[in-house]
Length: 138
Image 1 (cartoon, rainbow, N blue to C red):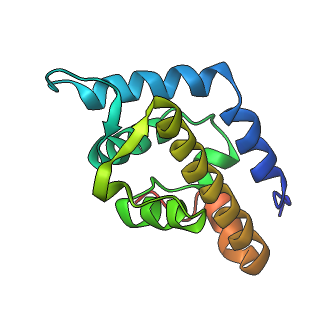
Image 2 (cartoon, rainbow, N blue to C red):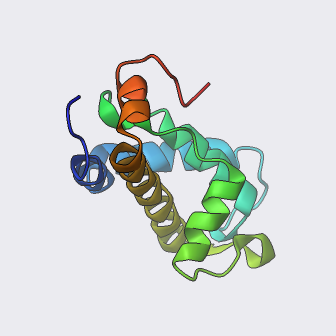
C-alpha cells in the first residue's frame, strides 16, 4: 500500500492555500446564501457553514484526498471547531467571512488529520478506501 500518512495533511494544506480552494469556498458560500435577504456577511449561520462545507468537498482535487475524506457532517464540523476552542456557531453564527473561511480551513484540516490517523491505525481499511473497495462517502 502506498503510504499517504503525512502527505494527506500536506496535500490538504497545499489545496487550502490555493486559489482553487479560495474560489471554491466563495462560490459554494454564495450558493448556500441564495435566497437570503439583506445578506451582510456577518454572523453567518451554522446552516450556511454546513452547506458550504459539504459543497466545498465536491471541489477537492482528485486523488487521495477525494477518496479518503467523507463529506463533513454537522457533528464533525462542531467537533472540529470545538477542538480549537471556537465558540459554538449555533449560538451566534460566525462573526464574518474571515472567521467563516478559517472555520472551513479547520474543518478540512481536521478531516485530513483524521484520515492520516486512520491510515496509521488501520492501514488495511485505508488501503480499501484508496483502492475503491470501500467508499467513505456512501
